Image: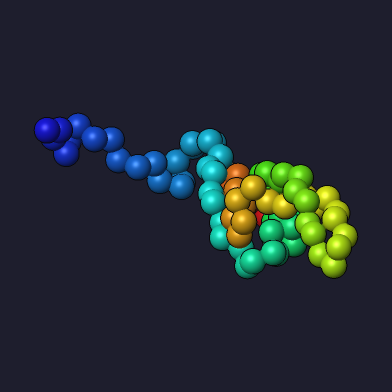
Amino acid sequence: MTNRDEIPPWPRPDEADTTPLWYVVRTKPNQEQLARLNYQNQGLVVYLPLMQTLRRHARRTEEVRRPVFPSLSIEIIDFLKFQAL
């Protein structure tokens, strides 16, 4: 067992730690691209992995790019930079 005194406390936002943090954000269904654009317009770095899939409708087949993780996107937030905006 570890003693609670040995566990370092979480860094506070006002400390000089400049490491950006990754966050997973849930979006509305089929709105991942719109959410990505909105977050990028706010100055955040967004990672939205896409895959090429086939969509069939009314005897037609077309290739579309769909998110690998539907309704999720990943943002990198640097709070020191974000608070300055």
